[in-house]
Length: 107
Image (tube, rainbow, N blue to C red; front, side, top):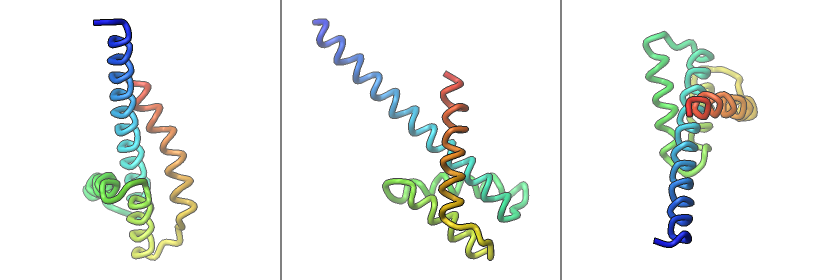
């Protein structure tokens, strides 16, 4: 095997690793967002983890994070909470940094 082949395989491994890491960070951010939203919604301790899981699963509906925002926004609206999209997005950005630190810090 040539050094070019070795280098190519190294790049492929790094790309796969980075993609997996990014997936874990986004999933963690969404779980943290679900926990934050559950608190705002007044969920019981038993329902909090289930709600956070629902928020994580919402991210698989469409490309991007719009589906997560839409779910949380709808749940806030249905509960009569006046928490808008801007506040949700700001919290997602804050939690992205937290999630990245938690996931990357483990490596």
